[in-house]
Each structure stands twice: as structure tokens, then as C-alpha cells.
Figure 1 (cartoon, rainbow, N blue to C red):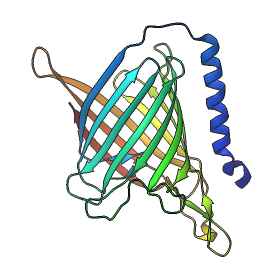
Figure 2 (figure 1 turned 30 degrees about the vertical axis):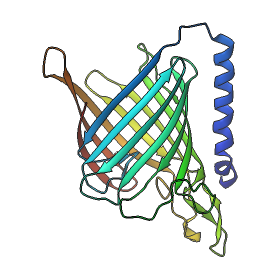
Figure 3 (figure 1 turned 90 degrees about the vertical axis):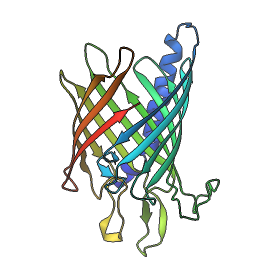
Length: 254
């Protein structure tokens, strides 16, 4: 089992390469359009894949994305209102292999207002960056089923250890999620696919064993403010069965 888990990253890359090959073989010429999107969300809590990243604080989450054709590059952040130690600044790039399949590389970074962080430090043993490869399927109108597989492949991931407790390398922490759109809400279930060795003192990035770490529903509603402007509202019920946690999250977007 350990050997299988340590090779998960290579499995993800294989899926990605296969998807890209299929896309190029079926690709048709389409007119490229440039799009710049700017927005922000105000969330009552910042819950990421079943974990309260914002430590109970409301979170402001700005975003900026430029897209052209099948490619997009963006910036995304999360800034807790009450806790300066809980901040996030991400950069990502996405390639839409097909209308339903996309591949994303994300550079996660967690600075603090009072911390002595070095953003441009990408050294293997000292970097605060975390790089992730993500492949996702967005479903169709007839079958509104979504799927996503993400693997950390470099940086400040959870650490594997030798028997003497010294670092052995990162765990390539992997998360998978399935979702389904119903009439009134979207349902989702997320899994931690990494199995840390507790006997060596290892801990997991998403959880300390295989299992469900993110389970819940999300409902959205657009509230009409003016003739030309609607305010999107979101409510989520999120549970983490492995950690025995539950969260009620409310948010609005502009």
C-alpha cells in the first residue's frame, strides 16, 4: 500500500498526459477571446477541503483571472479578518483540455503580516510554497457529476519520516472529490488518499488516515439588487467525519 501511495503523483501525470493527447486529437479551431475577471468573496469562514484554514475567522477572498482560449492564469487570496496569522496568496494556471476536463497547476503560499517570510524562496527544504497538480471533470447537463483529483508534488507538504524520525521526503498528499448537482443544492464528498505512518510520528496534510474528510452540500441564490445587478449568496453545510467537525458557512460574491 505504501508503494502505491508514493507513486500517486506519477499516476496523476499519466492521466493528465492522456487527457491532453485526447484533446489535441479532437481539437477544432475556435476563435480566441481575451477575458479579464475581477471579483471577491466575503465568507463567514474559510473551509478548504474539510479543514478550517481561517481558524474560525471571516475571510475576504479576492480573485483576478485572465483567460484566452483554452488557457487561464489567475491570482486568488484569502485574508482572515480577525487573525493576521491566517493569510493565503495563490497563483494558478489552467488548461481546458476539453469543455469538461481541465488541468491546473497551483502555487499555494501562506504569508503572515508579522512573519519573516521569504516569498521568492523555492528551495526544497525551506520553501513556504506548496505546488499542486489538479485534474478535474465538470460534468454535463445530462449528467451533472463532477470529479477532481489533486496531488501536492513539491514544497511544504506533510513529511514522510525514516524510522529514526529524520525527514524522508514529502508525502505527495492526494485529495479526491466527487460532486453532484441536484435541483436545490450541490452535494459533494472528498477523500484523503494519503496514509501517514503514525508509528513514525507522521501527520497528514488533509487527515491522519485514509477516509472521508469533506462531506456536505452547497446552495446558491442570486438576490436581485437592481435591474442590472444580482448579489450571489452561498450557504454550505460542511462536515469532516474523520476530524468529527461540522461547519455552517455563508458567503456573498461581488
